[in-house]
Amino acid sequence: MENMTLCIDCGGLGIKASVLDDQGTMHAQPIVVPTPYPLSPQRLLEVFEEIAERLPRSNRITIGIPGMIRHGVVVATPHYINVKGPRTKPDPELKAAWQGFDMKTAVEKKFNQPALVLNDSEVHGAGVVSGSGYEVVFTLGTGLGSSIFDGGKLASHIEFSHSIVRRSTTYDMWIGEHERRRLGNTFWSRRIRTMIEEFRPVFLWDRVYIGGGNSRCIKPIDIERMGDDVVIVPNSAGITGGVRAWQLGTE
Image 1 (tube, rainbow, N blue to C red):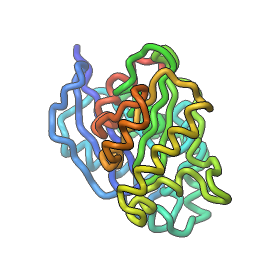
Image 2: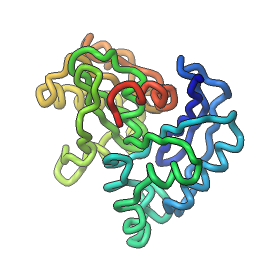
Image 3: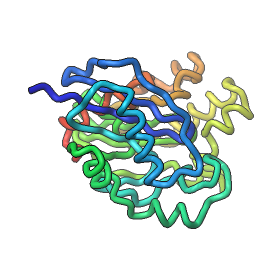
């Protein structure tokens, strides 16, 4: 029996989903809904249920969530702990509710299906890596996402987005959506090139992939100057990677 995978890509501003077969073919146009705030784990589970009702039936689920996710448990997540979403005031009660929440078990119980819950950049990476060599994935959206694959196997997650890049400014803040809008694409695109140049001696990757919704805003001149080891990939990988993630040792 062929698996049908409900793939859900959770972002700070929007949640996208579709159902795919084992070949990665979508069996419905992706659904996109605004991320509701305030957002508790229980409310997000309700959103998953509402989305599933609008899509074809599935027999397993892949979910990508921003933040540090270990073995399906939320260690920490940005945005969702804030009252009104990205760059708004954190809510202590929401932070406590999210920290240590076992999303994998909760999803499996609600849907009575096996679930794979990963960092959203890890799901994205599963959809684009070649499976050969040391490959790094950066996703550009509300903030910065990242994942690392070695020989096609997912490495332990590190939140590089929280690294300090300029004084008290993190990479998340420095290249996130707020700064892109403030700077405009030309100057923001140069920042992305600077980030790649600064990270290159840290990772010494064989190949780096840049995806996420804002990857399309990088100027061609900056893509060219970043080098042949840099590949720009479509944001749709956040959904299509939900199938391949089951095959790449990401559990």
